Image (cartoon, rainbow, N blue to C red; front, side, top):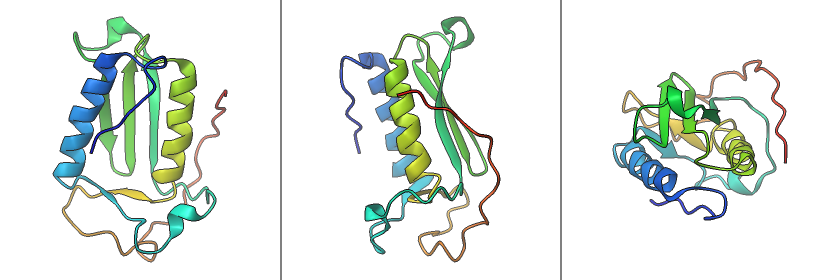
Length: 137
């Protein structure tokens, strides 16, 4: 799995780091796709808030040297810390919109314990209240 992003909106080091991390997450089964069987990908966003995933721009001084992006994961959460200047605000906002859909609606799920969670939504936790977010497009 590789992710392709428009070169006018991201630096090449961000793409390199992102692809390396996502290949590991998906390759080891830590995150799994679960939308192929039931046709939910074609449905409009549901706003379920099953999990949270977003990009946050972080000042360069607060990021490890040589790292353009890194995930900070918790249960039902993956916050991607992105070195400021590695992508445009428009790219961050678009990624946040996409992540809210695919992670928030459970189209990709976190599987740390190795359990096969493709049988959701019956297993899905009840939607949790989440803080409001304003995404500027």
